[in-house]
Length: 195
Image (cartoon, rainbow, N blue to C red):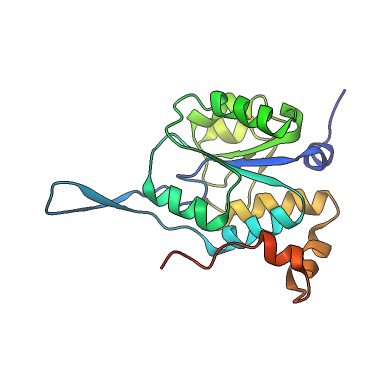
């Protein structure tokens, strides 16, 4: 059966993101410490963070699946109340299979946003494969949808807005988020930061 892009987006229950190059611009800044260890610095888009609140309010579960282990990612995931966080994943399908089992869903109900070749095994099998505008050519070729914006510049929000729009709930989800009386909006909203 042929699925249109709209059909694929409407089936999504779980949205997974790579981190470096998708939720960040891919730069990894390391500040050396006197002890010989480094402090890692990454920048994340506030638009993506707001999008994650909208995604949850719109009924999606959210996950990070990344190759690197990073305290910065753990902090950001905690602040955004991410449902599934898998770091140190050289072979990302292992994490994806665990998420499928935990969420009791199928590959057709997963969307994945990636930017580099390590993401290809997942992108080749999920129901909706999304590449960032700055993705490698092989990744764009495997994608069903390419975001207008680069990673770290709102690509995550592009993916979320696209899915919610195709499900016909983007505008109503935004209005619910803006409603000061919505207890659900407060429940799914992101944290206030870790300062």
